[in-house]
Image: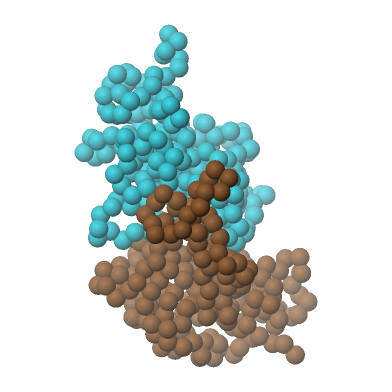
Length: 218
Length: 219
């Protein structure tokens, strides 16, 4: 099978974001999605720290310490962009104005519970940022993560063992092996990487999956 | 004549007492009022409760205040950073208290304080450990958590331009918590890049009206 690398995962997510969307990309892996958004679509990127219309990273030497994204990386502003304060920024999030957010995850449960802020280790320093607001606020919550942990365990689980970021909030999961929708009646595979059979995906995942629609029709 | 400009950061912060609650603006280094924080360190107030999104980066600003042992408790959303070693050490050795608040709840609690709101219900964090022990309520089929405002004795923020009435404009993402912290504190002290004459700021572009500002320092 051809597992997707990080860039390919980002490109796969980007493909599904329609023209005209307002989108927040989480820190880390989801940030890569920005580099793969189709140039023929106008998509407005939001960042928690008070900006809509984020553009690409500035050229070297053109960085401005007042112009950063939520990951505190230097960014640029597109024509039509806007600045606003933090309470307005989270009003956009919580008030259901964002069409999509893309978040990384440690685990997602069959019920769409998300765990992405804390490993549960007692000596860990907790940090939550805007993840809990995004999880409850965006109209569609997309998760982007490796399918398996480094130990080979499925990150899609019956119940999250890590502390929750939000309950029943995830709509779709993008992994390096498959795209899976979270619905009221369970998990539905949308597509899989080349060379991976549904049976093998099911074996690796460990929680019940429903076959892709096209495969069922065939 | 109203003139909120103060000659120095030291003079602007001379009356901060031990045990004060101090909001500090900024998201990482964008909008962090570095000169005001340096003046607060030099001033010596201790047992402070600090409200900021983070808990300091590297060795300057808020990190230096924590490193100097002046902070008793920090209320923030994201303390852990690759360069938050002063916070990490103070937290792990047990001296520094932490109230971890989701970022949007932090912003809204600050906004609520400035707007005279007694409490509010937010869907954020419901069903998570950050809502444990908090009052919840189901409204319109959705679960909410009750949250209270965060008031402060002082807010230290950074803006771009100010006139002598304390009207402020900001620069790009350095705005972040500035406007809401300015409204939430009894005494708001602003560090600005440029002083302009009264009437020079386009009233349509003023972000923080001077009513929320007590002291301004040009740096």
